[in-house]
Amino acid sequence: MGQINEFELIKRYLAPLQCRQIPLSVGDDAAILPCDSATYVCTDTLVSGIHFLPHWPVEHVAYKAVAVNVSDLMAMGAKAQTIQLALTLPDAQPDRLAALHQGLKAACETFGVCLSGGDTTRGAIMVLTVTALGTAASGRPWRRSGVRPGDLLAVTGTLGDAALGLAMLMGQAPEDDACMLALQRPQLPLDAWRYLTKLDVHAAIDISDGLVQDAGHLAAQSGVSIVIELERLPLSSPVQQWCAHHGNWDPPLFGGEDYQLLVAMPPELARQAQTDGQVRIIGRVERGQGVSVLHQGRVFPLSGTQGFQHF
Amino acid sequence: MGQINEFELIKRYLAPLQCRQIPLSVGDDAAILPCDSATYVCTDTLVSGIHFLPHWPVEHVAYKAVAVNVSDLMAMGAKAQTIQLALTLPDAQPDRLAALHQGLKAACETFGVCLSGGDTTRGAIMVLTVTALGTAASGRPWRRSGVRPGDLLAVTGTLGDAALGLAMLMGQAPEDDACMLALQRPQLPLDAWRYLTKLDVHAAIDISDGLVQDAGHLAAQSGVSIVIELERLPLSSPVQQWCAHHGNWDPPLFGGEDYQLLVAMPPELARQAQTDGQVRIIGRVERGQGVSVLHQGRVFPLSGTQGFQHF
Image 1 (cartoon, rainbow over the protein chains, first blue to last red):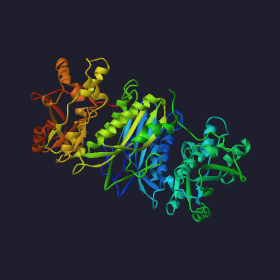
Image 2: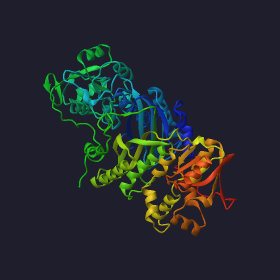
Image 3: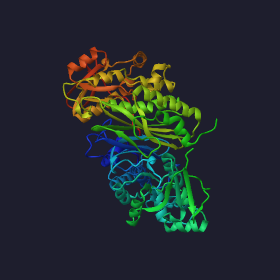
Image 4: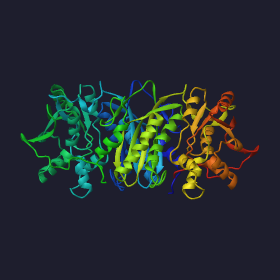
């Protein structure tokens, strides 16, 4: 099959994802989004060769481009409503576009968002930039600066799966579908997030750079010390096995892209949320600064890769 | 000079452009933008090798990435307030980053916008995606579907300068600084736009794909026929000379990236706006469909490149 032109591309693969309740969007110069008092907005980019490889399933890549943005809004206690999609593609092959459409469609349905607009451009490599716009879902915004001494630190889901998935894709670990999917098509903790929006969460962040680095962001912006207990980390069995076998906890401590929520909240709420099966308590907050990890009560030396940096 | 890391890049070159009046932005997972009733949003991408060449001044590229988005909101009758910037860079050379900062800063100051957030990623080529968010400035949105038979069609500024600038950069025309700047660092018609926001403009579009193609969007979405009179087109003297010399009107008719406003409005308002020196009347609207161009009262055959298409 040949390539198609830009207008056809938009009409066939993007317009069906367009928001119906929005006055204007695809086809006009800008969309008009109704809002009450505040719009939450965030932007994340996935670049071929950096965040994904050219041979990865395009459907997963498209899904993930939406998911990582929805995750950022969730980490603020906000619900994504619409997305702007900037799509740079080296070509316009219908089969790739159909896969892209499928991934976007699945994400839109899963997260309850629709396409309010964007841009489609040609370029040497595939780049997807999504800007998600949403509204408050929690009583107040979950700021990184809201952690208080005495809070407990809790996390949704399991940690390190995406990092182990990456090791698998690089041939460094035996393959496990769940871990590879955790990397390529992250499942966001929607149920736990919905549960948490009803509580007095003091601060939150989504774990995208790795637990230690992201906990470090919370500690730095709140001016507190965060203590994580290694044996409390929720691990899937492949990650548990890998850590035991290698005697190293890099995937759950430093592996990026888990897209689980790290939240700080009053102890009684954290314990209740854990009892309700929504989160796992992994540490506590004290006066001071920085992040430390304890293993069987002793300081665990942090010698990992210290999270992902682009430059 | 060596490269710098991602956090340093953000701190040094992007954080100074951050909105001060916004509760959260750079550093948190999302920004919270106050809003009244509606947020206008648009997204445009500039890709190296497609929209600009690697040797073009980075300062101009950065300026243009903001300008083209501000232009989209202006074409809706809306004023940009903040921008989200997704920056993909092949490296983090301080001199290029300083130029990038200068271009963004100049655009932020000129257009009265600030940076509400974004993402910085590495990639094989430079890609800038800006999402602009703004609020209504005109009495009602200027929709593409609002053109009515009997309206006059008017345009701000001059047409074809950017297209001629591109020809100059490709060595196909003698160089003229103003035309090359029109392409690389478009000056938006801020004064005329401000004047127009106080009037009953029926529809507007910014001329990014070329006059004929963009007039075609208005005609198609409004279900009307648009008649443009060639001799009325406002042309700078380099464009006038080029057209006379080559006996062809492709730059003003089909050249993209002028970022002037094409507006449809009641005749008496259009004539007043022309008298006030804010716009030039270039045509009229009739019942029917499509765009036709007249030259000395006769149909002018449209055989140009028919506007820019990506695929």
